[in-house]
Length: 162
Image (cartoon, rainbow, N blue to C red; front, top):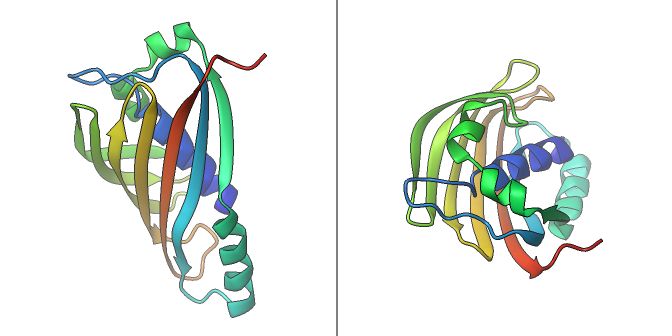
C-alpha cells in the first residue's frame, strides 16, 4: 500500500516538474528525491499494523534517477497530468502551475475503482523540487477512510552516474 502510494505520487510529482506558462524545468543530470510520509491514517487499522507502518514510513524513501538532456527537454506537465499517472485516471479541478510554483487538486480513480482526492503544492526549479502531496478518500485496502500526506524533495546532484 505504502509503496503504491509513494511510487504513484513520486511519478506525478516528477511529472509536475515539467513545463508551464513560465517554464521551470528540471536541469538534466542526476536527481535524488527523498519522500517522507508525514501523515498516514486509515480508519479501523489495528494498532500493531499502524505502529509497523509508522516505523516504516519514518525512514522515508530515496530515489535516484538520471534525467537526460532529451528527457529534460521533453518534460511536459500538461501532457503528464492528462495521462494516467500511476495513481489512476485523474480529473483536475485546479492546475495552477507557473512561476516555479505548483498548486494542483483533483480526484483520481485508482486501479480498483476507488476515488481519492489528490492535492499537490510546492515549488519547482532547475536544481530543486519541493512538493507536498495530500491524498484523502477510501482506503484501497477497504475498511474505511484514508488520509496520507507525503513530502518529496528532489535535488540535482550533478552529472548522471554511469
